[in-house]
Image 1 (tube, rainbow, N blue to C red):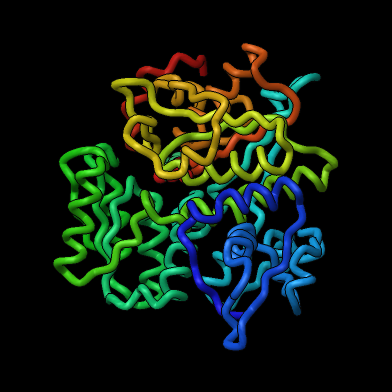
Image 2 (tube, rainbow, N blue to C red):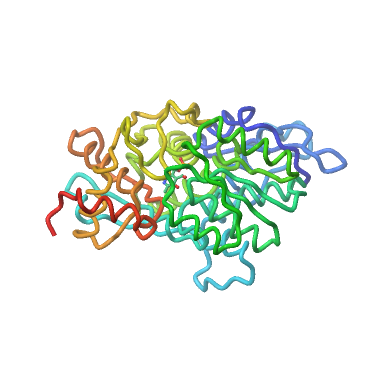
Length: 388
Ligand code: PLP
């Protein structure tokens, strides 16, 4: 079957409908193998990642619905326990799911808190390997990646993922880092052989525009994580489905999801997935409080492409100090040294639980590890309120 791709906004409602009903209509294909009827359904099934696509022989079969589980809906998130891979791209695709860990100190009789540990990815040691891999994969499949160089604006993690993949494919890279990225990050990128440009601001719309202009001028390709729908789709197809599958295996389902807002890719996909699947799941975003900064996170008013699909139940403001104190608390009580955006999400979840806004099975996405932020820790440890 051959593929024609529609913009996400043309089929997002079909995605929600398929997830809500857990069933799909088939598509019809023409003699050349292109989808003739049901292109939205085809794109929707591709986005949620069924292994099979049902095909109708004639019009009378177009209304016969098929349960998505019969189409291998969960197949792509069930890894292989031997974990042997002969190719880096295969490792990135198939080494799933990442762990889901119950957080003892946040759980009680009424709440079970689950942390999705996203530093279990090989290149950026963060959730961003997922989007780097999928954006590059789709660009190659569509013949869009003809250039020999990739330029990308990144707060660090997406860049590390893209540079790793580009190196593997023999492509050159240039990353544009915001003023807020730690100084040591330059050396990571230089070690990987990437060119580094420091932007004198945060990654604003203007800063990203400038990257696109530079790429055009230099005949380079830019994946642009802020606008690329594959950022949203990969979290629908993997991150969200993994969490759903892991909980289902334990006979559970999420009642609430709490996570940070950067591009909005992962939280929007999780919201679409779980609200469509279960209806009554609460989803809360987390942003840095005004005049604060938390690596990887941005405030909603900076503009986020997929948030309109998400129907969030709320957005919680967290300061850098609150995020850091939570990181330290968790490290000393739970043994996990998580990153600052994860700390912000845990802080927000704690507040929501204390306020009685959420209960039952609560999932918090932890995008990366604390080891990434040693330079910031040096400054923050002075302000730490947690007793050793
Ligand atoms: N946390 C960290 C450490 C990140 O690097 C990012 C994104 O760059 C996020 C959270 C936010 O994720 P998203 O872009 O999917 O909203």
